[in-house]
Length: 467
Image 1 (cartoon, rainbow, N blue to C red):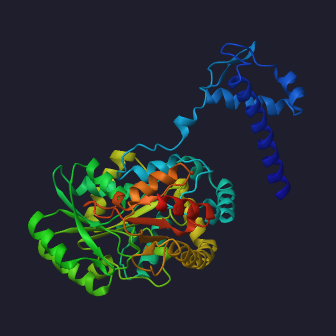
Image 2 (image 1 turned 90 degrees about the vertical axis):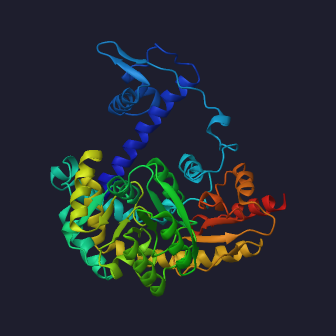
């Protein structure tokens, strides 16, 4: 098996080399639109590869649209590659820092860009070996795994496993109360479609995950922020917001809060749930960072019994952002309505991703991965705090677990200005007001400790803080 895989890797490398050679000739104008490519046999001789390698490379370039095939005549250039412009592919320095700014900068960045402002782990921190093993196993399984739609609720075996996992955190949800989604974001989108009408009010934490702002705006909701404390939302401000705005929903992280790293206390949880019950408020509890915790924090869904609280999660942060798989746990009648919405908006979920997650959760590799990851994150947290401290950047609190540090910059420093400054050094930061609805976090910055190991980040920060 190892020899077979090695042969596949070598074959792919040779195909890539042939494709790169063709692209290079097109970019250099040695092959112009309409010109004929070398014959398969001639190019195989030039590249010192087999004719089958060239045929496969040409076919892939046809699929890309770069070349086209004329039966009986050969392959021809169909389009010119647009010349790369550094000004176009570089970071957009002049864009206003809005709720999508960090996401755009991070997602569009190349591998050479450092991303202490992003919200995910580096690829090298993910369980690559386990993923490859699981994919090979699935590739040898039934054809339906690779080709069929998933059932409306999602893979039954994974929902059964999620039911048991939530039960360990005190959340009672039967498999029929769990709906699989493509991600945590899709879960919230579906819930907004179910519960909101344009103009409805939604409470969020201030600060909170910036994509909550963007998603709620897409649903034309009125968004109201509630200040966050180290124990959860400010209860008095929460009560006042309920009285003044009569919101339909409240969206929060109760485990590890994004961006602050705060953890909900049992006392705050009980007070929030009592207020929600009195006001008829539905709560969406986003728990995608649950598995980063050494000791589970209180869950609103556990105290509430999934009455007013909807519990959501995903594996994008711990397994793979490429194999998208999330879930919703809620009251049966809400799951029924959400299932119809899921079919209407995306027809069916990705079965392959669900099968992949199930394989990793049941073969022991996920447990081992998370044990090692929590230890690695603890070390990275300590090192990042020390390095930032030497620059006068201090944490708002020291999180019990997770990947984020919510930090205060030295007096007089504006986080947006610092973030724009270091973009020129190919570093993406996350300035505070991207997370703050009230725009009162201009002196704060969120750091991802897993993405903050490169010393260039701190040299660039030091220079920016001096300006």
